Length: 125
Image (tube, rainbow, N blue to C red; front, side, top):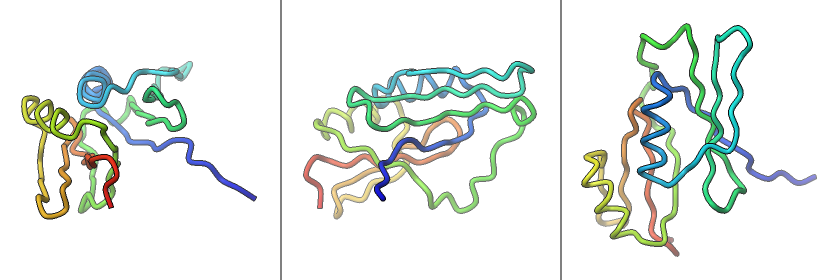
């Protein structure tokens, strides 16, 4: 038996704001969208150019006015970039870098809902 990573899900309060953030910050584009017939939810599946993993953004009508409780926010996404310096400059310009670990050679950005995304250089150990 074999498993392959397919997608991760996070819930968002403002779908348009989140779509803009993930496209600008990481180049992720909408691969497919599912809208509930009753309007209770919207799912957008974002992917990079490799198309082997997707990030599912879920908007819930009944939760759009209340921030999500992220607990201690110890869960995060991790993305590798082929241009670490360029990515850092972009994210610095966007004002979304929330933590840097210079000793490890990584940094984190925070999305509009408070989720953290780790940015890792190529061949990072």
